[in-house]
Image 1 (cartoon, rainbow, N blue to C red):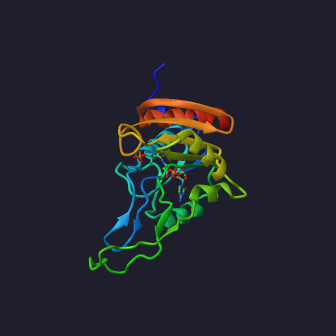
Image 2 (cartoon, helix red, strand yellow):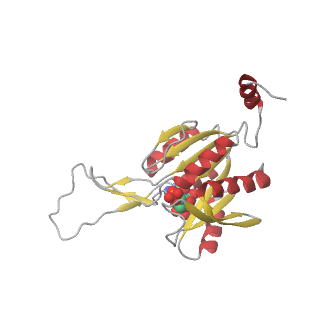
Image 3 (cartoon, helix red, strand yellow):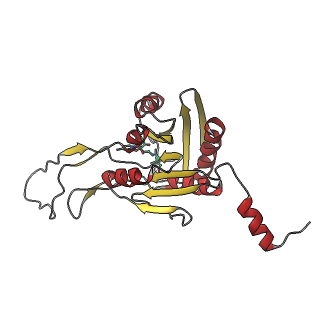
Length: 230
Ligand code: PMT
């Protein structure tokens, strides 16, 4: 039987998928920590892995809030998009929006430290060396995990050494439900490229997802997460 376009749109509205009715907050991109009005400390995250998760969550029916820092990828206009460049601003934006979330995915590459003071004017080259004092930033993922009404949480662990061991420590110390181990020691997957290779880790489950596009990695992460947690 053939159905008209109007009927197809109505059918689509009533079509439920695995994440229909779920609110998901996703952070992504590279945090930017100002040194002075011109310079900053940041990293190589492009936001592509996080955006692949945003796109896949939307396809699966979720309402997505996307809190992004510095990114080199297109925003999805079907998400509610909020820019927060520094770790402190991202922490504030996440905490202001977390109450209504069912799931929190922390894919942003957030600086662990930022300059204690941001110089008001451009720092002049009038000394042989320049000492910057860095102070720890709030840990957004850890603070979300400490909430009494905590959403399900997926963190990432970007590692270059002893990846599995370090990711397991992060899973335990941050208190999240899942850690996605992302070995970023090579140049052909991970940071600022289109492909990735990760390991899904929870307290009693581990699964490697072989190298493929970030869109497919995101799909697979969500498939496992839905099967194990929802
Ligand atoms: O953006 P792409 O170019 O696509 O690259 C993707 C990626 C490699 C950046 C991504 O897959 C990834 O691994 N993101 C996490 C990077 C990171 O900061 O990892 P971490 O091991 O330092 O942090 C562990 C977890 O704590 C992460 O979920 C991080 O978002 C979170 N965190 C860290 C520090 C902090 N102050 N607050 C946090 O919430």
